[in-house]
Length: 384
Image (cartoon, rainbow, N blue to C red; front, side, top):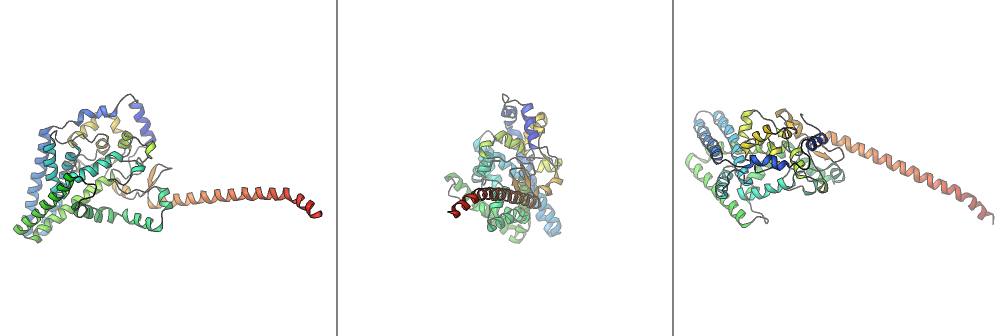
């Protein structure tokens, strides 16, 4: 894994930018949306997506394997579509809120996601990323080693199942996008609830409309794999960019927003074609530093500023090692695999046992010393 240790990166940041220099000031010029670029991205995403789905339907009469190939290609466009919705939610895609809400809601429907509800929940992830005291809001459930050590067997089993790749990347995305996103929450604002209902009605209209037109079987043979792989790839991207060995986690009192962005998010260096489909989200550390930067400006921001290149760089070969990371060791400042966690727990137990034995030996020695002191007095009293 191409990773630079956290403490070294922190020192590099301090050297390159003393406290008087504001990192946000450096990145601010890149945070201005360019309207024609935004509309061009909408066009070069949604039009090819539509054409790909048409080809998937046409290929059904030839071979389902050929149709599946086009559905798979469509899933990559779904990832790019999601990034457009994501940028609209961050307020970075258009200056106009009306345009953001229109495009965000439209792309949200395509991705089976209620735009406004998702936007608020995702904002919490940006506010608290890397903060141990504020886990559980839009992040991947991550236990510390100490929490895992103290957990009951039921909690450990639940955590083990949650962190299993089949749950994380297969069951999880299906549950979130197809079930969780269909319901409103008590915390939802009225406009968010309306947006959830509108999204659900739009999805129902799409299913009924196209199902009646081309047949429900044909529709789902195209639609299901497109959504499944799109959601899987999206979750995989999100996971890898926050779950790697030397990721940043700190307690609230020690947590820093800028450091959490640059050390708590990776730069996933993808082949150019995958970088395009993923909307440059691989520059995740910069996205977290300032979420107002449109995705099409992230690469320039990275290339123009050397300090932003001093980060954790991951590639495709690092994905599997990242998936194996399960528990955060606060003392070591890194994520551990299950095997590493077992070794560390054994070390902790051994140290605790050794400390207990030493304390016990000291207490026994102390008691023995007192007993020795009391023996003469006991003899004196017994002679009376």
